[in-house]
Image (cartoon, rainbow, N blue to C red; front, side):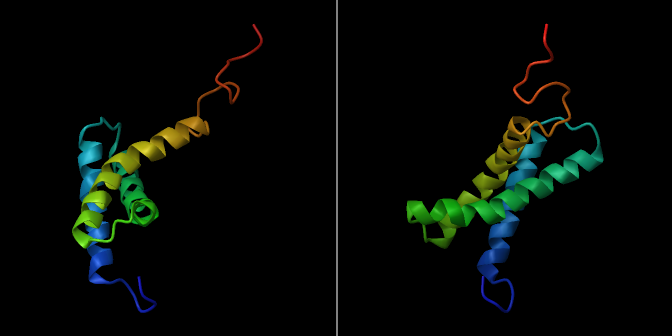
Length: 104
């Protein structure tokens, strides 16, 4: 991304991540519209920011491959956010952080 704004490649990458996250949430059930929107935004953000991080060590520079990777990160990145949330115990479950419920 240059300092003046988003390039066409950046916009395409965001769109690819958005549609990847749509595919990811279509396979899951959501309790309400708000959780669906948050899931799509999380997947899109994951794709936008994780795609360059993953592409660099893999030496992926072709824009078409970057779009494919962005789509995959939108789909899989959403699941990654959910896993990290579960590991950090941000889901609101009661009990200790290690998963135990008390001293019985």
